Image (tube, rainbow, N blue to C red; front, side):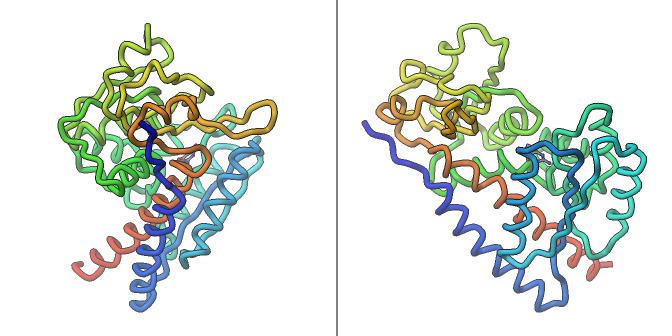
Length: 288
Ligand code: GUN
């Protein structure tokens, strides 16, 4: 068996096209969706991610604003800025790029963001909504994985899903979102003993551990769907995921490449959440 490649760039292009039309609809009603991105410090990867987010906004007509702070900025200044953005009618979504430099209280900062503008879905209110299946803003990376599975018509209900990685940004929300779709979900993490005894049971294996070659062919069930969320830069400069792609693609039924798999979807789902925030505000303004 040779796995079918899930082309994240193609799916992202299609979804962005659909959302561009929704932006045009909003523009025709006098609303331009707006996203504010806050970047604190000079983490190199974060700079790249933020640049990509801003460029993607431009492409579909979302107004964007980047606010940069030095890493020694007092937390109170960051909080004041978020409160001002909460009150700014031209802004529908607010994103604080993570990780924050040492000394910042991430929870305190994220909880300052208005629940209605929390397009990253990291506010406790939206995290709680994942438990009940009623979150307003699904976190962007797992939301992107869900879209990729949908795009290929891969069934989720009743499937055995193993998520490798228990981060708040990917692993935990992913597990909750697939549980809501009635999969049987297991979360593995860095302390899991004998990872292979879990991964081998997976009909759908989602890997977000940040370790190149963590998943080898003998750890994967024949015909499994393998979603690689990892992005690792090797010493020779190559970008790879967490899965031994060349080996596992001979065993899986579907696999996502790195780059070009999940990555393009993360930014795309941020655009979706921002457009939806603007649509929701317009609806509630009409109702109110
Ligand atoms: N850092 C790594 N991934 C993310 C993300 O999805 N959102 C934010 N805000 N920061 C991140």
